[in-house]
Image 1 (tube, rainbow, N blue to C red):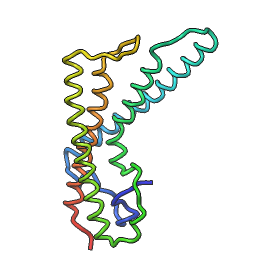
Image 2 (cartoon, rainbow, N blue to C red):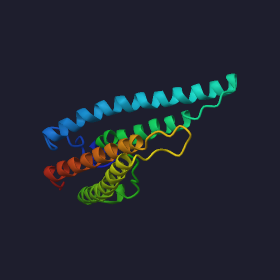
Image 3 (tube, rainbow, N blue to C red):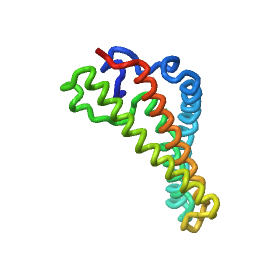
Length: 183
């Protein structure tokens, strides 16, 4: 169920791309579509890796030291990378206990404030992710497992995902402000 100022709450669809921020919104929409497909493939790949691991351990009694980390990288990457696409549809979990108690105008203000708070948090998270990614890449950080993959891989997925989510939130705030407050 979508949350926020969507058709259920306002009687109109949530920020059509041509109304939101124009060109930037269309580009982000395309990126989100690509990311959703890649994230879906990543989740299926994680399921295959884990299934392979269980089968190899059970039938052949081999230990695999790479599958847990690989599947975590794939799942974390899929979650972070697809966050902006979910936000574009207002599909994140929201608490709507007070929605029915507030007027349309109050809900509009509430949603804008929630989006701004989310943008501030996600923007900070993205900024810290960028610093962590740069540090991991320049210092050559690696996982402490026996497989020891470079940590810039999961950090880059987290960084890109949070940056895309921050951009998505900013575009949605702009769209809502351009649309104006309801009567």
